[in-house]
Image 1 (cartoon, rainbow, N blue to C red):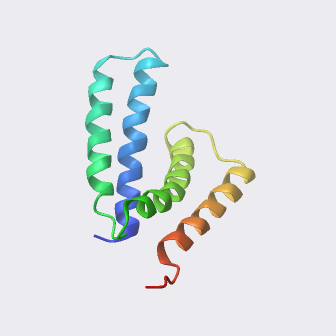
Image 2 (cartoon, helix red, strand yellow):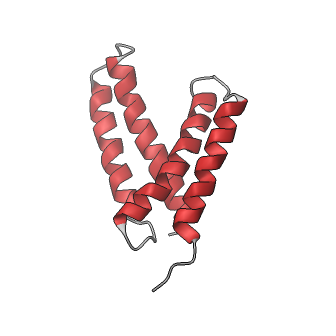
Length: 108
């Protein structure tokens, strides 16, 4: 599976799972959202193992940049709050770092 698709799928599953808990515990919605959150977070973990990175730590570090960008898209699309310029600049820096972690030439 394509690395970007893996990270985007993982981000959606993780953010969705965490948001389910947010709705349950912070917005006082149905406790069933806790179950939805757990299932979504398990799906996140499974998807992230499909990363093409050789080492787990490198996969997780690179995923972090994609997660930050996906969180800001979620902020806008789901919560209705558009990111400000600092959000966009910060996310861009994180994506650049994620790209370096994933695709920099390595010795050996």
